[in-house]
Amino acid sequence: MKISKTAAASARRLFGLCQTDGRLDENKLRTVIARLVEAKPRDYAGILGALQRLTRLDLERRKVTVESAVELDEASRQRVVAGLASQYGTDLAVQYQINPSLLGGLRIRVGNDVFDGSVQGRLTRLASAF
View (tube, rainbow, N blue to C red):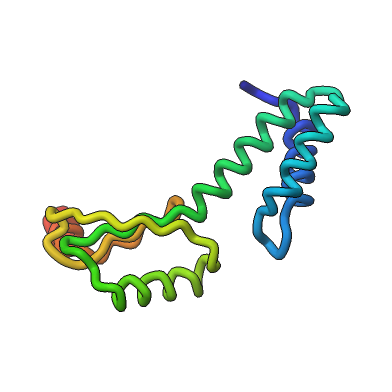
């Protein structure tokens, strides 16, 4: 669904108001949505859709998937989370997966960023270089 520029701008402005210290405050977001539905300004359905999209993108930015060939011990997990927290913030949702096809190393996905330090990834890059 295509929305108007004014609805998109209003959604961005409202989404910015729902931020506290650079992080999304769910209580503020609920209040904004309730007031928006109650007031029903022009193109409020478009504004709600854009707010939903912005919220989804913000949540996806905080989602972390760590893939390894073997189970990581607790010290390794803490090092990975500490390194990611220094770069992306502390409120990350981390999920660990075992992927034997990696052969070794880690593949970390944070939102749209992918850090591939796996043996399988290196072999793939080496094969594509030839």
